[in-house]
Image (cartoon, rainbow, N blue to C red; front, side, top):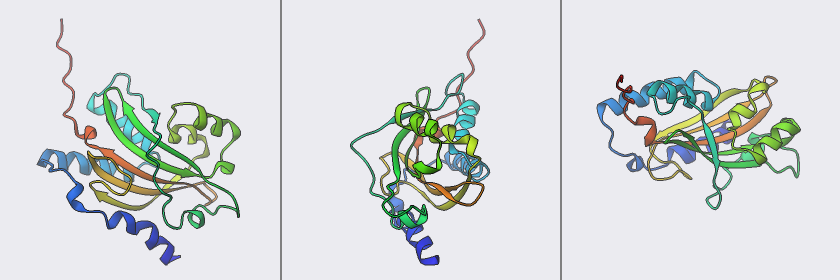
Amino acid sequence: MRALWMALVAPVMLSSAADARALSADDHASLARFEQALAAQPSATKVLQQWCAERGFANPARITAQRLTGADAPPPPGLHAALDLADGEAPGYRHVRLTCGPAHMSEAHNWYVRSRLTPQMNAMLDGTDTPFGTVAADLHFTRAPLGSHHGAGPGCPAGTVLTHRALLRLPDGRPLAMLVECYLDDILRPLAKPAAPR
């Protein structure tokens, strides 16, 4: 089990720190607060929505998942075992850009177990722009971090300031999804100024 864990974490840790853009002291402080929020919440979608509202990127703060094609990431090492897939069972896969108003907040690669979602959830993932965390919220999953890295990890685009890997688990312990999350520098946009009174 330890060997599998190290195989899952290693690709993030081996990414070059040179991928990270130069951050100001304020950026570092904001990024530290954002990471604390991620650590305290199983759904990254909820964290992004709260962050969007707090920073004033959009009102109302609504996270939209734009499906991306043509830039699929290869499955992480040990994915089949980590998700406890049955023999011959293929994981679902989603590559999305999560936005809130004008802010491109993250890109995410998500390998998930379709048989552990309801048919309605699978239909929403296949046919709508609803983020995974929103679709699967009723399953009350928990989030287990696998590793993090400042800068762009494998599969992340330019402008990534933070890469996270995580495993989502159902309340009975079964794995639901493995995520590679690439948080973009738009999350560090300055706080929006309130509109001047008329």
